[in-house]
Amino acid sequence: MFDEIINNRDLNKYLSSKCNENNIEAKICSKLVCNDDYLVVKVDNYYNNYPFKKKQIPKSIDCLIPIKCKIPKRKNIKKDIYNLYLIELKNIKSPQGFKIKDIEEKFKTTIDDFLKDRFKNLFDFEINNFYCYFISDPYGVKLKKRYKSITQEEYEKLFKSYNLRYYRRTILFKYKNKISMIKPVLPNPTICNC
Image (cartoon, rainbow, N blue to C red):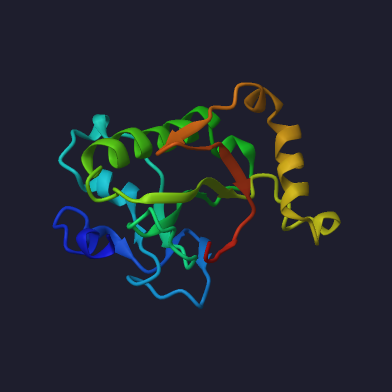
C-alpha cells in the first residue's frame, strides 16, 4: 500500500518523515522506518496547494499517519493491517487560539473527502485502530509547575473540564467500521507500532 501512495503524483510531494509544525510534533518511534513501517501525509499542505479559490480551501488536519502493524496476519485476511492516526497540531498559548467546531471540520474533511473520496483506492487497507489526535497545550499545562508530571488521562480530564460544552456534543468519527473521537494530547507524543 505504501508504494502506491509514494508513487502517486498527487500525493508524493506531500509526504514527509515527520509530523511537525511550529514546534509541535507527533514523534514517530525510532524503531519505525519511514516508507517501510509508516508514512506521513501532510494533508493540510495538499489542500492548501490544490487549485481551490482561496475562500474555498477546506479546513483539514495537518498529518495523516498510517503505521503498518507488526502483528501476525490472520489466516482469512490477506492484506496488511494498519493503525491510522489523524493529527491536528496547534501551537497556541490560550483556548482562544482554536475553535472546537473548526477542529471537528478539519477531521471531517480529511475522513469524508480525503480518505473516503479522493484517495479511497490508495487507503484501501484493514484498520487495526483509528485515532484522531488534537496535539496542543492551550492551557499552558507543560509550563505550569503544578502539572510537571501530568499524565495523559489527567490532561484529558483537565481539557474536558475547560471544554465541557464540547464534550456534551462530541462527534464520533467513523472510518472503515472503526470509531474515534478527537482526543486532546499534550505535545510531543511518541507514536509507536500497533
